[in-house]
Amino acid sequence: MTLIGADYRFSAIPVVDLIGTLEYSWKKYSVGGDIPVEGTRHFFTANFSVVKPFDISLLKPYAGIGYGLHVLGGSLSIMGNPVGGAAITGSGYHFIGGLKVAPPAAPIAVYGEYRHYWTHFSTGNFRYFTLAVGVMLGF
Image (cartoon, rainbow, N blue to C red; front, side, top):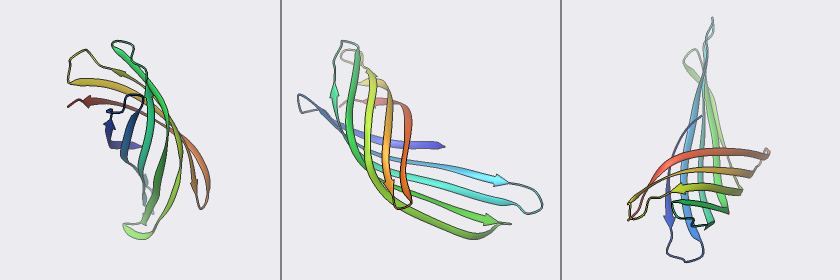
C-alpha cells in the first residue's frame, strides 16, 4: 500500500517526546477479463505517541507506546459502475521504535521507524505493522 503522512514531535519535555501523527494509505485493485472489476482500499489513522529518546551523540534511538483512531474503507466497481463501498472505524494501541540520525547543530535529521499496532474493529481485532523513513525539520 502507498502511505503518506505527517508527524509533529513536541520535544520540550525533558524526559519524553510527544508525537502526533496523521497517516493515509491506499491501494487500487483491478481484475481484467470479460467483466472488469476494480476496487480501492483506504486506510486513515490518527495517532498519539509518547516516546523516550536515548541521545547517543549522532544516533538517537527512541521507543514508546501510543494510542490511535483508525478508519478502514473500500469501494468496488464492476464494468465501471459502482456497486458498493463501506468503512469501519476502530481504535487501538501501538508500540513505536525508531532511530533518528541528527548531525550536531543541523536543522535537519533523517529517521527510520517501526510501529506495531493492536487495533479493534467491530469485525474483529487486527495486528499489523508499518515501516517508515523520513526527514525531520527542526525549528
